[in-house]
Image (cartoon, rainbow, N blue to C red):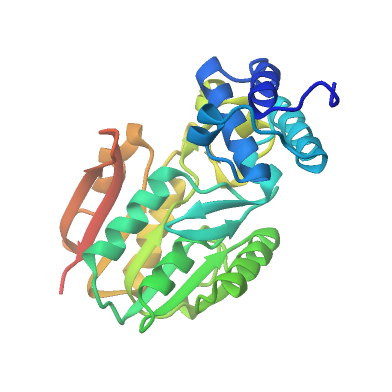
Length: 288
Protein backbone atom coordinates (compact mmCIF):
# COMPACT_ATOMS: atom_id res chain seq x y z
CA UNK A 1 0.00 0.00 0.00
CA UNK A 2 2.80 2.44 0.89
CA UNK A 3 4.14 2.36 -2.70
CA UNK A 4 0.78 3.48 -4.10
CA UNK A 5 0.33 6.32 -1.65
CA UNK A 6 2.40 9.23 -2.91
CA UNK A 7 0.45 12.46 -3.04
CA UNK A 8 -1.08 14.25 -0.08
CA UNK A 9 -4.51 13.83 -1.67
CA UNK A 10 -4.03 10.07 -1.92
CA UNK A 11 -2.83 9.83 1.66
CA UNK A 12 -5.64 12.01 2.99
CA UNK A 13 -8.29 9.95 1.20
CA UNK A 14 -6.77 6.68 2.39
CA UNK A 15 -6.44 7.51 6.07
CA UNK A 16 -9.87 9.22 6.12
CA UNK A 17 -11.24 5.85 5.04
CA UNK A 18 -9.30 4.12 7.81
CA UNK A 19 -10.63 6.52 10.42
CA UNK A 20 -14.27 6.28 9.32
CA UNK A 21 -14.46 2.89 11.03
CA UNK A 22 -14.19 4.62 14.42
CA UNK A 23 -15.19 8.24 13.77
CA UNK A 24 -18.07 10.08 12.06
CA UNK A 25 -17.09 11.18 8.51
CA UNK A 26 -16.53 14.86 9.34
CA UNK A 27 -14.42 14.03 12.39
CA UNK A 28 -12.49 11.43 10.42
CA UNK A 29 -11.63 14.00 7.75
CA UNK A 30 -10.56 16.56 10.36
CA UNK A 31 -8.44 13.97 12.15
CA UNK A 32 -6.84 12.92 8.87
CA UNK A 33 -5.89 16.53 8.18
CA UNK A 34 -4.46 16.91 11.68
CA UNK A 35 -2.34 13.77 11.32
CA UNK A 36 -0.95 14.90 7.97
CA UNK A 37 -0.19 18.34 9.41
CA UNK A 38 1.64 16.79 12.37
CA UNK A 39 4.04 14.75 10.24
CA UNK A 40 4.43 16.93 7.13
CA UNK A 41 3.83 20.50 8.32
CA UNK A 42 1.21 20.94 5.59
CA UNK A 43 -1.96 22.53 6.96
CA UNK A 44 -5.50 21.67 5.89
CA UNK A 45 -5.83 24.51 3.38
CA UNK A 46 -2.55 23.57 1.71
CA UNK A 47 -3.54 19.89 1.71
CA UNK A 48 -6.61 20.81 -0.34
CA UNK A 49 -4.94 23.39 -2.57
CA UNK A 50 -1.73 21.49 -3.23
CA UNK A 51 -2.81 17.88 -2.93
CA UNK A 52 -0.36 16.80 -5.61
CA UNK A 53 2.54 17.35 -3.23
CA UNK A 54 4.39 14.16 -2.33
CA UNK A 55 5.18 13.00 1.22
CA UNK A 56 8.54 11.39 1.85
CA UNK A 57 8.70 7.75 2.95
CA UNK A 58 9.43 8.50 6.59
CA UNK A 59 6.51 10.93 6.89
CA UNK A 60 4.21 8.47 5.14
CA UNK A 61 5.17 5.66 7.51
CA UNK A 62 4.52 7.85 10.55
CA UNK A 63 1.18 9.05 9.11
CA UNK A 64 -0.01 5.49 8.52
CA UNK A 65 1.09 4.39 11.99
CA UNK A 66 -0.72 7.33 13.62
CA UNK A 67 -3.84 6.71 11.54
CA UNK A 68 -3.85 3.03 12.57
CA UNK A 69 -3.63 3.97 16.23
CA UNK A 70 -6.32 6.64 15.86
CA UNK A 71 -8.62 4.25 14.00
CA UNK A 72 -8.33 1.92 17.01
CA UNK A 73 -9.62 4.74 19.21
CA UNK A 74 -6.41 6.17 20.67
CA UNK A 75 -6.62 9.97 21.08
CA UNK A 76 -4.38 11.94 18.72
CA UNK A 77 -2.92 13.82 21.68
CA UNK A 78 -1.59 10.55 23.12
CA UNK A 79 -0.24 9.55 19.70
CA UNK A 80 1.68 12.81 19.24
CA UNK A 81 2.41 13.13 22.96
CA UNK A 82 1.22 16.69 23.37
CA UNK A 83 -1.61 19.19 23.11
CA UNK A 84 -1.86 22.99 22.98
CA UNK A 85 -3.28 24.82 25.97
CA UNK A 86 -3.50 28.62 26.22
CA UNK A 87 -0.70 28.91 23.70
CA UNK A 88 1.63 26.47 25.48
CA UNK A 89 2.65 22.97 24.41
CA UNK A 90 1.63 20.52 27.13
CA UNK A 91 2.83 16.92 27.14
CA UNK A 92 0.14 14.31 27.79
CA UNK A 93 0.08 10.55 27.93
CA UNK A 94 -1.79 7.60 29.43
CA UNK A 95 -2.61 8.29 33.05
CA UNK A 96 -3.18 12.00 32.46
CA UNK A 97 -6.43 13.58 31.30
CA UNK A 98 -6.26 15.43 27.99
CA UNK A 99 -7.16 19.10 28.63
CA UNK A 100 -10.52 20.10 27.14
CA UNK A 101 -11.44 23.37 25.40
CA UNK A 102 -13.76 24.18 28.30
CA UNK A 103 -10.85 24.04 30.73
CA UNK A 104 -8.86 26.36 28.49
CA UNK A 105 -11.86 28.69 28.35
CA UNK A 106 -12.08 28.88 32.14
CA UNK A 107 -8.34 29.46 32.46
CA UNK A 108 -8.52 32.27 29.92
CA UNK A 109 -11.31 33.89 31.95
CA UNK A 110 -9.13 33.85 35.06
CA UNK A 111 -6.19 35.35 33.17
CA UNK A 112 -8.19 38.09 31.47
CA UNK A 113 -10.03 38.95 34.68
CA UNK A 114 -6.93 39.38 36.83
CA UNK A 115 -4.37 41.52 34.96
CA UNK A 116 -1.15 41.95 36.92
CA UNK A 117 -2.16 39.38 39.54
CA UNK A 118 0.62 38.88 42.09
CA UNK A 119 -1.02 36.87 44.86
CA UNK A 120 -1.20 33.13 45.47
CA UNK A 121 -3.06 30.75 43.16
CA UNK A 122 -3.73 27.10 43.98
CA UNK A 123 -4.83 24.52 41.39
CA UNK A 124 -6.49 21.50 43.02
CA UNK A 125 -6.13 18.29 40.98
CA UNK A 126 -3.72 19.64 38.38
CA UNK A 127 -3.30 16.56 36.15
CA UNK A 128 -0.93 17.56 33.35
CA UNK A 129 -0.37 20.90 35.08
CA UNK A 130 -1.97 22.81 32.21
CA UNK A 131 -4.03 25.27 34.29
CA UNK A 132 -1.27 26.02 36.78
CA UNK A 133 1.31 26.46 34.03
CA UNK A 134 -0.89 28.85 32.05
CA UNK A 135 -1.60 30.90 35.18
CA UNK A 136 2.04 30.96 36.26
CA UNK A 137 3.21 32.16 32.86
CA UNK A 138 0.44 34.76 32.68
CA UNK A 139 1.14 35.94 36.25
CA UNK A 140 4.95 35.86 36.62
CA UNK A 141 4.80 37.77 39.92
CA UNK A 142 2.35 35.34 41.49
CA UNK A 143 2.97 32.22 43.55
CA UNK A 144 1.36 29.21 41.88
CA UNK A 145 0.81 25.88 43.65
CA UNK A 146 -0.64 22.73 42.07
CA UNK A 147 -1.78 19.53 43.76
CA UNK A 148 -2.57 16.01 42.61
CA UNK A 149 -2.81 12.56 44.17
CA UNK A 150 -1.42 10.69 41.16
CA UNK A 151 2.33 10.11 40.91
CA UNK A 152 1.95 9.66 37.14
CA UNK A 153 0.19 13.00 36.80
CA UNK A 154 2.72 14.77 38.99
CA UNK A 155 5.54 13.35 36.88
CA UNK A 156 3.96 14.68 33.69
CA UNK A 157 3.20 18.01 35.35
CA UNK A 158 6.80 18.30 36.52
CA UNK A 159 8.01 17.68 32.97
CA UNK A 160 5.62 20.30 31.59
CA UNK A 161 6.67 22.85 34.19
CA UNK A 162 10.29 22.32 33.28
CA UNK A 163 9.69 22.48 29.52
CA UNK A 164 7.55 25.63 29.64
CA UNK A 165 9.68 27.46 32.19
CA UNK A 166 6.70 28.00 34.48
CA UNK A 167 7.20 28.56 38.21
CA UNK A 168 4.79 26.09 39.81
CA UNK A 169 5.23 24.30 43.13
CA UNK A 170 3.84 20.77 43.02
CA UNK A 171 2.28 19.14 46.07
CA UNK A 172 1.18 15.52 46.42
CA UNK A 173 -2.27 15.85 47.93
CA UNK A 174 -5.67 14.19 47.56
CA UNK A 175 -8.67 16.50 47.31
CA UNK A 176 -10.80 13.99 49.21
CA UNK A 177 -8.42 12.96 51.97
CA UNK A 178 -5.26 15.08 51.96
CA UNK A 179 -3.90 17.31 54.71
CA UNK A 180 -4.83 20.66 53.25
CA UNK A 181 -3.49 22.69 56.13
CA UNK A 182 -0.10 22.46 54.41
CA UNK A 183 -1.41 24.40 51.40
CA UNK A 184 -0.82 28.16 51.31
CA UNK A 185 -3.46 30.77 51.96
CA UNK A 186 -4.65 31.60 48.46
CA UNK A 187 -6.19 34.52 46.61
CA UNK A 188 -7.41 32.25 43.81
CA UNK A 189 -8.36 28.58 43.93
CA UNK A 190 -9.13 26.79 40.68
CA UNK A 191 -10.16 23.20 40.09
CA UNK A 192 -11.41 20.93 37.33
CA UNK A 193 -12.16 17.81 39.40
CA UNK A 194 -13.83 14.59 38.21
CA UNK A 195 -17.50 15.30 37.51
CA UNK A 196 -18.82 12.87 34.86
CA UNK A 197 -21.27 10.42 36.40
CA UNK A 198 -20.93 6.69 35.85
CA UNK A 199 -24.27 6.62 34.01
CA UNK A 200 -22.91 9.07 31.41
CA UNK A 201 -20.28 6.59 30.22
CA UNK A 202 -22.63 5.22 27.57
CA UNK A 203 -22.63 8.54 25.71
CA UNK A 204 -18.84 8.85 25.62
CA UNK A 205 -16.55 7.95 22.72
CA UNK A 206 -14.36 4.86 22.90
CA UNK A 207 -11.23 7.02 22.70
CA UNK A 208 -12.10 8.47 26.11
CA UNK A 209 -13.37 5.31 27.79
CA UNK A 210 -10.52 3.04 26.71
CA UNK A 211 -7.61 5.44 26.99
CA UNK A 212 -8.11 8.31 29.44
CA UNK A 213 -7.85 7.75 33.21
CA UNK A 214 -11.26 7.03 34.71
CA UNK A 215 -10.13 8.30 38.10
CA UNK A 216 -9.80 11.78 36.59
CA UNK A 217 -13.22 11.67 34.94
CA UNK A 218 -15.90 9.78 36.82
CA UNK A 219 -17.87 10.13 40.02
CA UNK A 220 -20.57 7.86 41.48
CA UNK A 221 -24.14 8.41 40.33
CA UNK A 222 -25.25 8.58 43.96
CA UNK A 223 -22.69 11.24 44.92
CA UNK A 224 -21.85 13.44 41.90
CA UNK A 225 -20.74 16.40 44.04
CA UNK A 226 -18.28 14.49 46.22
CA UNK A 227 -15.28 16.48 45.01
CA UNK A 228 -17.04 19.83 45.20
CA UNK A 229 -18.01 19.35 48.83
CA UNK A 230 -14.38 18.58 49.60
CA UNK A 231 -13.26 21.65 47.67
CA UNK A 232 -15.73 23.75 49.64
CA UNK A 233 -14.08 22.52 52.83
CA UNK A 234 -10.60 23.25 51.47
CA UNK A 235 -11.61 26.73 50.32
CA UNK A 236 -13.06 27.37 53.76
CA UNK A 237 -9.55 26.93 55.17
CA UNK A 238 -7.15 28.35 52.57
CA UNK A 239 -9.13 30.85 50.46
CA UNK A 240 -8.52 34.28 51.95
CA UNK A 241 -11.30 36.83 52.50
CA UNK A 242 -11.93 38.54 49.17
CA UNK A 243 -10.46 35.57 47.32
CA UNK A 244 -12.05 33.88 44.31
CA UNK A 245 -12.89 30.23 43.61
CA UNK A 246 -13.18 28.98 40.02
CA UNK A 247 -14.66 25.55 39.21
CA UNK A 248 -15.40 23.60 36.07
CA UNK A 249 -18.60 21.62 36.61
CA UNK A 250 -21.01 19.12 35.12
CA UNK A 251 -23.71 21.10 33.33
CA UNK A 252 -26.40 18.84 34.84
CA UNK A 253 -25.33 19.79 38.37
CA UNK A 254 -24.26 23.42 37.94
CA UNK A 255 -27.02 24.83 40.15
CA UNK A 256 -26.54 22.17 42.82
CA UNK A 257 -22.79 22.78 42.84
CA UNK A 258 -23.26 26.53 43.10
CA UNK A 259 -25.55 25.99 46.08
CA UNK A 260 -22.61 24.54 48.02
CA UNK A 261 -21.01 27.98 48.02
CA UNK A 262 -23.96 30.18 48.86
CA UNK A 263 -24.51 31.50 52.35
CA UNK A 264 -22.50 33.63 54.69
CA UNK A 265 -19.04 32.67 53.38
CA UNK A 266 -19.51 33.94 49.83
CA UNK A 267 -20.83 37.27 48.60
CA UNK A 268 -21.16 36.36 44.91
CA UNK A 269 -21.69 32.97 43.34
CA UNK A 270 -22.13 32.98 39.56
CA UNK A 271 -22.84 30.12 37.17
CA UNK A 272 -21.12 30.98 33.88
CA UNK A 273 -21.97 29.45 30.52
CA UNK A 274 -19.29 28.22 28.17
CA UNK A 275 -18.94 29.15 24.50
CA UNK A 276 -21.58 26.57 23.60
CA UNK A 277 -24.06 28.02 26.06
CA UNK A 278 -23.77 25.26 28.64
CA UNK A 279 -23.58 26.10 32.39
CA UNK A 280 -20.00 24.95 32.83
CA UNK A 281 -18.17 27.20 35.31
CA UNK A 282 -18.73 28.58 38.80
CA UNK A 283 -17.07 31.69 40.10
CA UNK A 284 -17.49 32.32 43.83
CA UNK A 285 -16.07 35.30 45.73
CA UNK A 286 -15.45 34.92 49.43
CA UNK A 287 -16.65 37.64 51.79
CA UNK A 288 -13.94 40.21 52.56
